[in-house]
Image 1 (cartoon, rainbow, N blue to C red):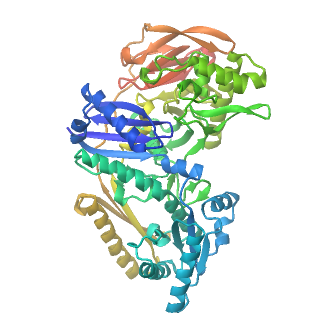
Image 2: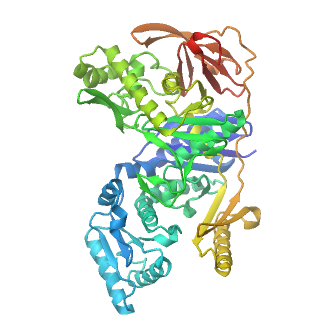
Image 3: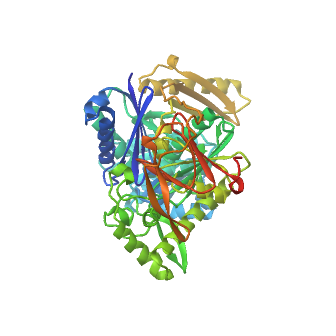
Length: 623
C-alpha cells in the first residue's frame, strides 16, 4: 500500500506522521525558522529511519502517495508583523475609515499599511483614470510599498477592479522589473462586505511572499526525489490543494484546524458528545471545541482580532506553551506571550537560551528527565534551568529554587485554565483531550482546576495536529454574489463557477467527474464546492482494560508535589501492554510526551493505546 505523510510545522517543533496501512509512524524535528526546508527534510529523513530501520528518504518518497502539509508560519508572521510593506488602492466608494473602526484594526492597519494608501475615482474618463492609476502606484512605490492591494465597494468591485487591472497591466507589465505584485479583492473572495473583503486581501498580500518562497522551495526539493504527486497544502477550511492553487491567507491557523479535525474523528470513534481540545505547543496553547460531531467555527473568522471573509475554526490561543517566557512583571509572575521558540529555546535546551520556561520548571521539579526528553534525542541541561529560574523568578521573589518552580507551574496552569473557561462551556460529561508535545504534562491538574473529570491523551498526542491533517481531501470551492431573485443570473453564475472548479481540479490532476460536487445558494451568495476523496487513517481501539491487575513500574521518579518530594511509579508506555489500568499518583512516559497522573485519578489505556484518565470524587469510586 502507498504511504501517506502528514506534516505540521510549529514555532518550536515540526511533527511528522507517516501512515503505512494499519501502522502509523511518528517523529519530530526542531523547527529551523531560518530555513524551513531544513527541518522538513530533517524530519522526513528521520521518518524514513522509523519506517525502514535505516535512512532511505528516496525509497520512502517514491512509495508515498500524498504529502499533506500545514504550517503556523503565516500565523507567526502576522503575530510578529514580519512581512512586506503594503500599499492600498481604494476605489471610489470604499472608505478607509471603515477599515479602522476598531482598536485592533487600527493597530494592524498602522503596521501593515500606515500612510501607503491612495484613492482612485473609477468614474473618471479613460485618460484621466489611467493618469490617476499611474500616479497612485508611483506614490505608493516611493513610500516603500512592495506589494499592492486594490479593493472597491461591493456595488462596483467586480467591474471597477477589473478596469484598474487592465490599466495596470498595460502601464506596468509584469515582465518589467519595476512592476509591483497586485492583489485584487474581488479575485480572492466574493464577500459582499467591503471591510472584511479588503482586510482578507491585505492579509493575503502580507503572507504571500514568505509562504511562496518556502512552499515552492519545498515542492521543488520534493520533486527532485521524484515524488509521485504534488505537495498538498492543508488549509484553514479543512481542505487541501497543491501549492499553486492555494491562497496564502488559507494557510493562516491551518495547524489548529488539523488538531480540530483529529479531535472530531477521535470524538466520533469513542462516542464523546462534547470534547475540548487543549493543544499545548512550544509557543501557545490552542483551545478548540467539538460538539455533536461538529467543529466549532466562525463564519467570518477573526485574524489577529480583525474580521475576515474566511470561515475559520474557532480557536482561542493563549501564550502559554512549553517555550513561553515566564518572568516577573510588577512583582507578579507573568506567562508569555513571548516565546523562545526552538532557537534559542528554553534554558535547559542548552542552545544559549537564558529565559525561564515551564520546561525548565518541570525539569527542576523532577517531572522531566534530562536523558529521556524528546525520545532521548535532546539532553536537557539541569544547571542552565536552575540558573534561569533563580535569576528570573527566585531572586526577584526571594524564593528558593523549588518554591520558584512551583509558583511558575501554578501561574502556567492558571493561564491555561482561564483560557479554557473563557472559551468553552464545560457541562458534565465534557472530555478534555490533551495533545501537543506539552499537552499531557499537567493535564490532570488543569482538568481538575477547570472542573472537568475526564481527560483523554491520544496515543498520537505529540503529533496529533499532523495526524489530523490527514483527514483532509483535495477540495476547491468558488463563490459569487448574486441577486437571489434573478434565476437567470443564478444559472449563469452556477455555470461560471462550475467551470472554475473544473479547471481548479484539472490543475490537481483530477477530473470533475471524480469529485463530489455541491451547489448552494444562500444570503446572496452562490457557492460551488468539489471534493476528491483522499485515503486517510482509520481509527481503532476500545477501552476494555483486560489487564486491570498491578502494573510493574519500570522505575521511580522523584517529583516535587507541592512542598514534598515523592518517588512516583514511572510507567514506560512503550513497554507496557496496550489495555492497562492503574491509579495515580504516577508518571506516564513515552518518547514524545510525559504525563503526571495526580492522586485521585485513574488511568486506563485502550487497545489503540489512547489513555483515558478519570477523577475519583473525594478518593472514592469512579464516576
